[in-house]
Length: 498
Image 1 (cartoon, rainbow, N blue to C red):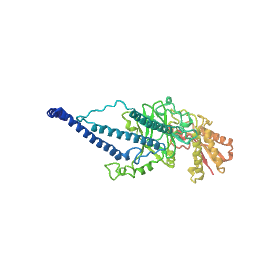
Image 2 (image 1 turned 45 degrees about the horizontal axis):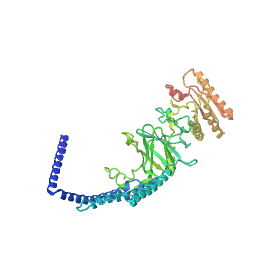
Image 3 (image 1 turned 120 degrees about the vertical axis):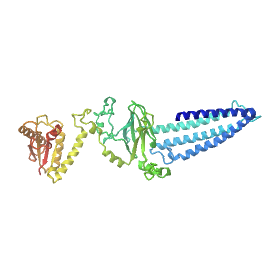
Image 4 (image 1 turned 180 degrees about the horizontal axis):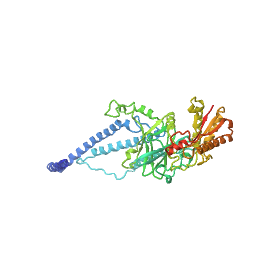
């Protein structure tokens, strides 16, 4: 029914317009062609002047009214070092083209008025004017040259890569439908290499985990964190279609192209908090963020920098938005400290780990630090249970007392700890699960404890400080009812005796 009513209304309006056209034609016939021409010319001339005034007023009023929400004006000055240069280029271009825009429109509509049809007036034809040709060729050429030279200078400055020996941090942004995967370097400050041939369900970026630089790389959550005042080089790539890495407030914009890595270098100059404080000075940003909650937070309080995709990459294009947090170096360091290595938490020891049988340098350092802290706490503690520590990272050949090659790292940590506390002595205890003969389990655990003691003595620890003992399956940590629990019970530990 609604569609029928709409159709009838359209038909009725069409009939009315046709009838108005017929009435207008009859009026022209009555008035005479010459009179109609004079009237139309007069009205067109005056209407052109009226439109010119209203149009230019609208242009300047809208520019003034929206200045505080446009990039480069009001509170939205660039929040990066290079951004001010780009804003300056755009402003100069706007001034020059704006002057031309206003003058040409004034001339266009004024000429419609001035040269409207009047009886007895004849047109004057000027087929050629050398002076006019020089003016309208030379002036645009000079202006364009100035703009192009300034633009090239800005381009070379903005698009320059980091120099050798220059201090900077590097991150990687990989775009896909519909989101960003961000990768940060760990303590080494370097991002590991990648190869698309290594891409799997777990290793979606195709990171090469045989490259030691990738072991401490971080893939955080949805928010992008960067420190203020630090030069940042962003590696940019896409997995599927064309995307765009766009940080509007920082004047950063670079295509993410499948198979063709790009980059952008910039230095943030304002933290998110500082930018919010700039916004709070303007009335429009002191309005409620949610109109339905007038007592809630203001617009400036909810403002965040953003990472957006500036290409129409598909129906889910809107979901490419990510929050960008620019924080102080101290805040950034605190955030970074909370992040975990992607490799160590998601890949290590699993099917996609190419280093299953190796102990990594990174793990050696972490284990040594952790072991040192634990033995110090055990020595200082007055609680008996705190005096016993499990040697988590040693192993033996199956059914044997022969230490595996990777056990040396944990035992070397124990050597270091015993040297650090030369007045303590320890009991080295071996334990097994309940599979097999109990007497055989005691014998095996005793032999394993003796192997550990021999390793320590061979590295200079006095045998008088070491007491090996095998308990077999008599002191389980958990019921021997599952493979995981049985693995917990197969352990070697030491207890500080004095």
